[in-house]
View 1 (cartoon, helix red, strand yellow):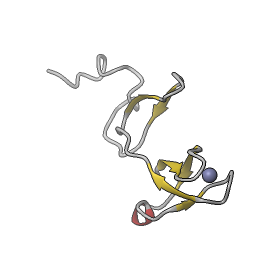
View 2 (view 1 turned 90 degrees about the vertical axis):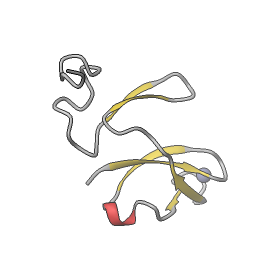
View 3 (view 1 turned 45 degrees about the vertical axis):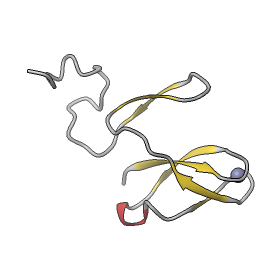
View 4 (view 1 turned 180 degrees about the horizontal axis):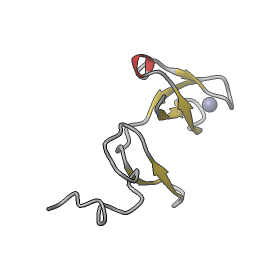
Length: 79
Ligand SMILES: [Zn+2]
């Protein structure tokens, strides 16, 4: 199951959740305030930098040989 990022609409808490692909667009429950959290749009198989400057590897969707760990260099995504 792929991991998706969700952000609470009430307290803005962000968290990751394992969900079946068929339910990805359904709102999730915020673990902090039990409010409603909506899925964050993020780029698959690449590094995403959060608003706090923390870098986290986002692997999912599939296709990449290393999950984006090589930064697209060793993978030969270009030529
Ligand atoms: Zn919340």
